[in-house]
Amino acid sequence: MSRKPIAIGAEAVLYLEDWLGMTVLVKERVPKGYRRAEFDNYIRRLRTINEARAMLRARELGIPVPRIYDVDLVNMRIRMEYLNGVPLVKFLMSNEGLNDKVINYVRIMGNYVGILHRGGIVHGDPTPANALVVDDKLYLIDFGLSEILGRPPNAQDIRMLYKLALDLNVTLRSFEALHKDQSNFLFTEFLNGYRSAMGPELTDRVKSMVNRIRRMVRYAVR
View 1: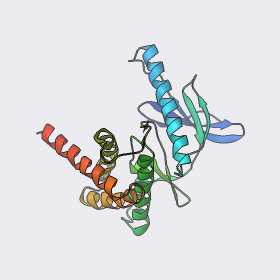
View 2: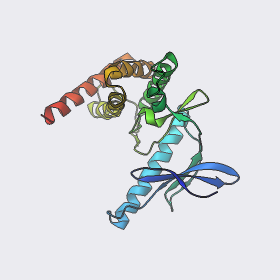
View 3: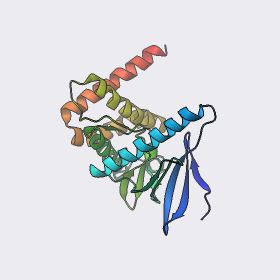
């Protein structure tokens, strides 16, 4: 099987590979010529390790994510299960509109992110583009910007709440980009799923922090 890229991102190339008799998805972090070689190698290695750890931890928490088969820290590759599905973003952009099935996927996505946050993990890019529907089952993908905080959230830990809120602000902004007029509705449904994992107190605290972040941004750009 050729290694023709199926996607090229800001820091990695995705391609399919025949590995041990299986078709696997390979995510390879390519060198960046604008960084010093030693620093570039350190960054790519660290992000590869962080991504693999976050995905393994997510599976332990019960979140559907691709299985990891191999982590190659020489070539900065992660070999993982290839999931042939449809990104949630395509359902949201469909001409069929925001039907009950799609809204339920949004709630499930919110629940998954809430489980991650409750487990002390920040996804980094929790958008509908990184939620994949495979045979009616929703998976979370692309943990390339994830961070393991190492502790469960606390309602009094402002720094941690801020990091969780940054995650949700990415989600809200993605909804605004897709459906400006219905973004608040979509985010509310997302939060309904999030709340079922995080509980009402922590959800309200994180949502309040999201509002605070957005006020700060609006003030800064005036």
